[in-house]
Image (cartoon, rainbow over all chains, first blue to last red; front, top):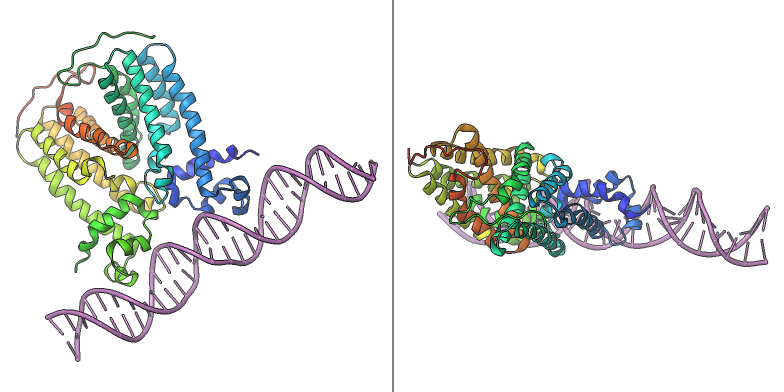
Length: 196
Length: 196
DNA sequence: CAAACTGTACCGAACGAACGGTATAATGTC
DNA sequence: GACATTATACCGTTCGTTCGGTACAGTTTG
């Protein structure tokens, strides 16, 4: 059994409890493996477990978000696809974001660089799409950031209110909102292009 | 010395490390108090420390945000004031939000109701302002949620990128963005009223 | 074929350290 | 003297981790 087998359980646990709250006892219970067995698959201990989950997350992000955003097609349709994927992973806003969770806790410093890289790549990909849609460099980057901001914020609010609808609404409105030309004051509508 | 004396140190610690990561050793070091002294001031232990910080946060939110939003004046000016206060507490995006941090970790269940209350009150207050600005009930509520979503999301992104500018930009644009009538498709501009 | 060996998967028990928390006696302060 | 405050020492528990070892499926070797 490869260690990837246990990624789903680990992901669920780290998302819910964070690094410090996800104790080896809980991990042992969740994976069905004894503590000692865990060290057979993850000689590096808890840190390696997190790293493995982050590896898997990197792969998922690339295959389901980044690749998808880079594919040819209507920019708005590509953003729509991203939204659909996000609705799946975050289970309609009921599940929090691991990258955000790892920003706090005693292991913050250990994983911060990786988390930073994830956010950077994500923002970058959206920025590229928006540039293709006709926005200039600076505005595209601002809106790329705003997209991730809305997603992350919506997750927090949905968690806090125990209600997925804020997240779901944000995901529904996001593509249109990003492409819209009128929401920034003093901004002239760009010439919209379609596809590549 | 009242126990409120130690709220700043505790706040800083819980914001950075979360509930599980903020160990009594760290708390002892940060406050300069021995364990025994800590339990003299906080007989309820760690939970009481968090509760005390949340009490303080409740008071701060009411005095600096809610009251301010309820005061008479131009809606946009009141939202502007909220932004200024938030830039202060979150130190320009360099500091995370305690309420968001407490949503994960092993003590999630203990504090979730209080956190939920904080978000509800905050959204409610913004919603009220937007209704005064001429928006109907439903749209005002949606934008009230969106405001908190943008704030929380911007904090996350600023933390992740180690760069306060995303948060600062969101705070700068927020009032105008909330009042703007054109960013939601199919929405007709309301009759904007000023003050009360 | 059978005996010996190898590697992967797993676990019970225990490790030292740190955890949250509590006595008790000594201090300072009015 | 009374009372708030503190330091020292300690409690039982749980933490992340490691040790020693079992079970078993191949594979190699005689």
